[in-house]
Image 1 (cartoon, rainbow, N blue to C red):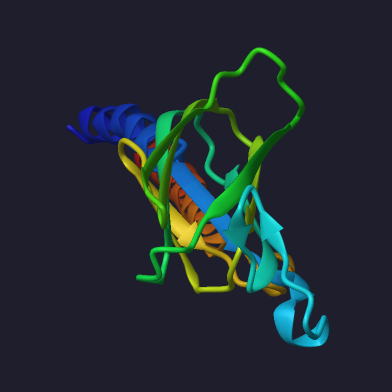
Image 2: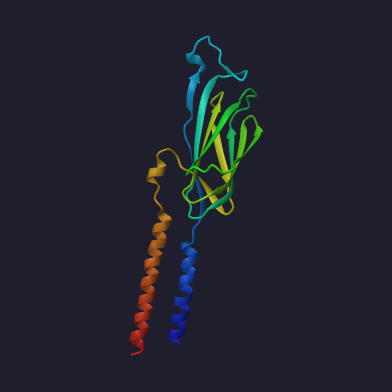
Length: 195
C-alpha cells in the first residue's frame, strides 16, 4: 500500500509544481513626472501657439510600459487620460518607441477626445518595453490604465523599480526545496520500512 501512496505523491507533485512555477502575465508601467518645457509666466508678453493652439505650458509626458511577467502579452490595451476639462487642451505629438526596436510592429492609437488616448500593442514579449512620449499644451495630471488578458497592470513609482524584489519567486523556490526534501524523506522511509 505504501508504494502506491508514494507513487501517487511523486506523480502528482511534479504536475502541481509545474502549475505553481508556470509563468504569469504581468505588465508594469512608470508614469514619469511631466517636464514643463515652456512656462508662459516665464516668457512675459510673448504669446506662443503651435498649429494655432495657444500654449500655456508646453509639457512633455513620458510613460514606460514593460512586460514584467514570464509570458508574452498579446493585444495590450493602454489608456491615457489627462485630468482636464479645458476644451483648448491638445496633445500635439505622440512618440512611440520600443525596446528592443521593432520596425515592423504596428501600434494602434485611438484619439477618443482631446484629453483621452488609447493604445493597442499587438505583442509584448518578456522584458520588452514600450515608451510613450506625449507633448501637450498644458500640464494636467495624466492617469494611465491598462488591460491584458489574464494579467495584472501595476504602477511602479520613480525609484521603486530598483527596490522591487520578486517575493513570489522566493516563495516558489522555498516550496520547491520543501517538496524535494519531502520526496526524499518519503523515499527513505519506504526504503527503511521495506527492510
